[in-house]
Image (cartoon, rainbow, N blue to C red; front, side, top):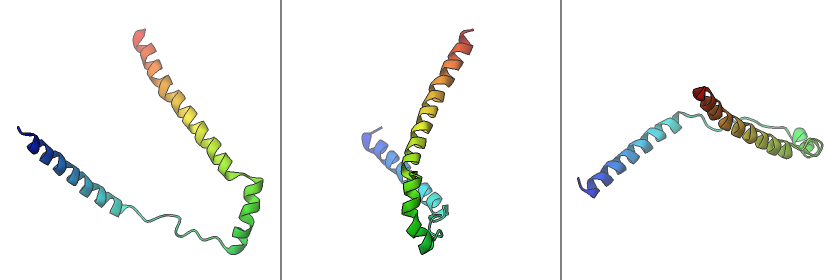
Length: 87
C-alpha cells in the first residue's frame, strides 16, 4: 500500500462526511429568533430591566454552575464504578 492510496481514501471519507453534513444542515430550520420581533416600547425599557436584573451576569453565573456540576458528576461516576468493582 502506498501513502498516496491512503491519502485518497482519507480524502474520499472527508468528502463523504462533508456531503452528509451538508444534507443534515439543509434539514435544519433557519434561525428561530428571526420571528421574534419586539415592539419599540419594549425595546426602550430593556435597558432599565437589564439594570434591575443583570441578565448577562446571571447567564455567566449559571454557566459556571453548570460547568462545576458537570465536572463533579464526570468525576463522581467513574469513582463510584471503581468503588463498586473493588468490592
